[in-house]
Image (cartoon, rainbow, N blue to C red; front, top):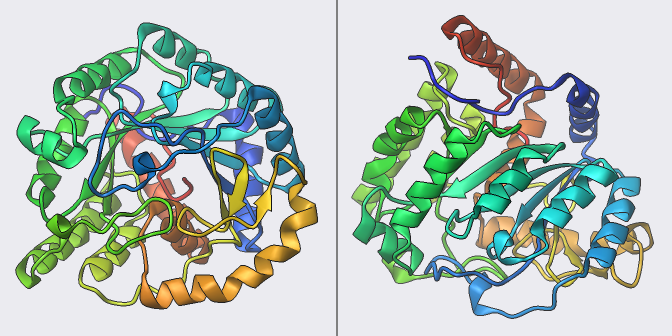
Length: 367
């Protein structure tokens, strides 16, 4: 099937050296990725999330520029811009311009409900953005409102269509958080993404209570039948990804997700090694579910780096007792452990897209 639009992550010639550097750092387990929650504010009330329940100071543009330069000098290559809802910051386009000026690659995650024409024009000027992801957890209006805490379904669908038609310099993808509430929509969501010319990112809802992001709502606790049905869907997604369907994650991540929903061990993540989390107030943590170990408003990351060693046992304990299955942790980890297989799988998918008349893409093995 021919897909319209820009499916997946475009490999621009100027970005190839940066990807090679990313792969080199992943291979040697060097800090490469930072997720930056630019704000804790959100206009939705997702029961799975804790972030909107908290308040936090927000960094100024001057502080953000200084911290971004520090992170780049330390070796960070790619920044995920998220929240809260990042487009609630009136200066969000200035933050993107800062990333372009500093020379860091970045991705953008949004709930898609507050985008304006000015935002879309600003995204058309983004130089280093690799993709923009819109969270869409259901195609059904009532179910969407139940899962997101607000009835903004029509607004997000309209903005998805606007972004798909905007000819942005980066691909647009959908983020689908699979749970017992919506897992039967998984393949319908893939069909919808293809119809819009988009890619689809699928990941399991993270069970258990976290430090900052996860909230353990009983409505998401699956029974045994639901666990097995969700696991089979993830295995099916792995097969479809290998066949060239516009699924963003590396196929091994979907197989890992099947184990996760069945309650099986999925091994260790590389939080604090490959991946770090920057809170809205400038506090740096090993991942989005751990307390911070440095205040980058007051010190440079290199000065505080040794303190992360004290976090290692806490991270291992988290893997054992309260594991997550985030794309920004386990997907990165499993990709780093199988870089050759990931590269071969991605090359195959690129070839299939070119054969079908599509455009080359690089899947979600990175961010």
